[in-house]
Image (tube, rainbow, N blue to C red; front, side, top):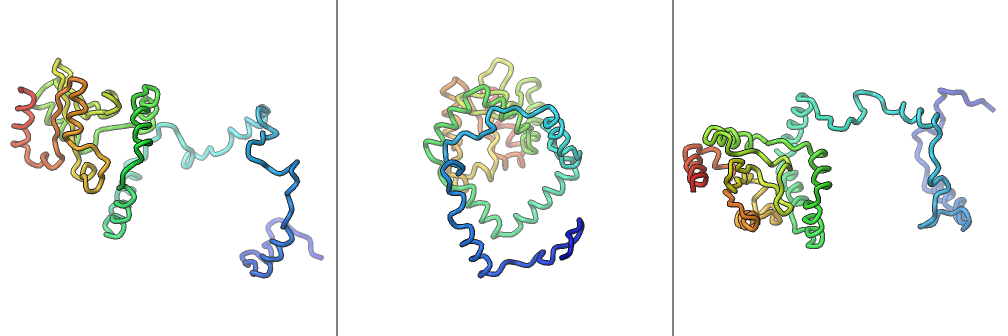
Length: 243
C-alpha cells in the first residue's frame, strides 16, 4: 500500500461521484447526528459563548488578511484607474437592452408601507444618519457640481451643498440650502432616478416641495436636463432667489 506524500494528487481528484455512490453515502449517513444531547437546536447556547480568545490567538488572527492589495480599509476609496474600469464595465453591461430591462425591474416596485415608515423614522435618528454619512462618503455628482458652480457665480456665499447628509428636515436631505438668512432650498432632480414611471416610489416635485414647506422652507426643483440651457436656468434661479 503506497504512502500518501504531501504534494501528491489524489487519483480521484476532479472525478464526480456517481448517482449510485451518492445514494450509498446518503444511506450510510442517514440517522446520524440525531443525539438530542449533541445536535444543534435553535436557541441552544454555544459552548464557547462569552469565552475570550487567548492573547496568542488574537495575535494570530491579527496577522491574517494583511495583503495591502486585498485588505479592507475603512474609508478606502478606489483609485481613479479602478473607478474608470468599473465605469467602463457598467457601460458595457448597460449597452445591452436585456440587461437594462433586468436592472430596471430590480429597482422598480412599491416598497412595503411598514418598511417605508420604519426607514423614515430611522433617518430622523442622528446616530443613524452619522453612520450612513460615514459609510457612503457622500460627494456631489457631476450634475450637482455643475449646479453648485452656477449658484456660486450667481449668488456668492449664498448657497451651500448639503446633499452630503449634513442637513436634514424630517428625514429628508435637500441638495442646496441658502446660508444667508433665507429659508430656501434647491433640489436637483435627475432625469432618470426621478422618473416616476421607472421609480414610482420616488417623491414627486410637488411632494418634495410640500414636505419642506411643512418646516417653513421654500423649495425650487431643478431638473438635470435644465442644466443644458444655462440662460433659461439663470432666469429661473434669479426669480426664485429674489422672490
